[in-house]
Image (cartoon, rainbow, N blue to C red; front, side, top):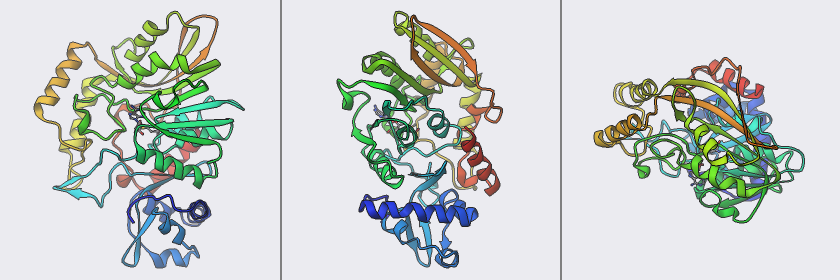
Length: 385
Ligand SMILES: C[S@@+](CC[C@H](N)C(=O)[O-])C[C@H]1O[C@@H](n2cnc3c(N)ncnc32)[C@H](O)[C@@H]1O
């Protein structure tokens, strides 16, 4: 078995104490397995007095000879354990490249989903919509306070993982899962909080070449634009909205804010934009990412692909011309919080956290290539959000 599988609830639930034990007894082994994707001798785990058979039954781990190997990343965060796909697997290499699949489930990056999940503006008794839930991390963190959470995603595999994680963390009674495009699965429903970290990467306009989790159209704003138009119809009287926003734009402001001003100027919304990083020079960031993806090998034969199929020179050049023609020059990293108010207003603030100052340059620091102590440090930062 190479994939997470919804076996019985009882077996899934029995995985949590095993993960807790392993994390408590040997963080080093935990990180070797679930971050570095190393094969670890079963003997070594036996010596800790831990029985990993539930992890094997559910497909979190698999046996490889006398060793075990992780099928999924299991991210520990504030007492929860969240299973998801690795950004890429060091055991899945074809023609000298790491393979990514269209339905891969989004990994948990330390500066991203944990930040939103832990800073969610959920209040006691809220009915929450977690759009584009992926592994379900945001749904899990909002479910504790919320009366009910609906989590949706276009990727059935993501919904399977999110369901698994809800059971694993004993939150399945609070969360309902639906598969579909944006608001389509929640037609006619209203929410006290709509929250998302969606597909928002600006990239050459060939959607079928990317995993479902990242492609946000050539300007990265395809999903956000639709959200801004449709979300107000899904809010209760006191309804709030919150999302992570890595928008491109001009030196003055992110394009997302321009769209908000145009679409919401006559709505009674207080829009708080929290700048986390940037504005960085868009073309320098693209150049940096290109270099990391294509020209900086991990070893002389293996390059790091961002996409599931290579982009042609023509597709790439068309995209760069589109960005230049549209006047996009900068890239931001921000978070929006939107509340109902007496009239429309925009408040801009800055998150003072220093660590991710150059966040737009961080995106490809994959765990496999980070040291044990760096990963511990990142986990600690996630706890501090
Ligand atoms: C960057 S991932 C984030 C996942 C999760 N929110 C998190 O923070 O870990 C974006 C997610 O959007 C989903 N997605 C992409 N297009 C979508 C659409 N049109 N409707 C709903 N979900 C979509 C993907 O399947 C993916 O799970």
